[in-house]
Length: 179
Ligand SMILES: [Zn+2]
Ligand SMILES: [Zn+2]
Image: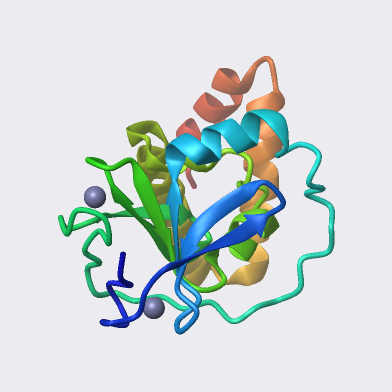
């Protein structure tokens, strides 16, 4: 198999973690992970490989270009990893193989996702990221509109309000005393 980013470079078996072998590109440090192998590894070893282990900041590559699967040459689909990162993983659903760009395995470890990789490829996960991003965007909009200090007071008030057993009455009061 050849790397789809660096043409003419053979992928070589290399361990991502003890017991987890991926087809790795020595040139761009990308790696093709078989999800079948991954599940086998995750069941047995993932919890042992400490998530707390200090993961140093590593340089992470992100190619916006579409990868083709090194195995079957079909185009791979991109999946968001999380709301706070713009990095995406590529998946060939035909082969059930994921492509990780350089540093993305370390990123998964930092986000504590290294033992639940297949979750990232579910609709629920992707929907949740979109929801979180909308929430972040909404917060940013109101923060700009109200200013940092007022916004943080409003947020604090809202958190308090949501905990009140009579929150509907409080809302009613606010609405009926608008000036
Ligand atoms: Zn490569
Ligand atoms: Zn494939």
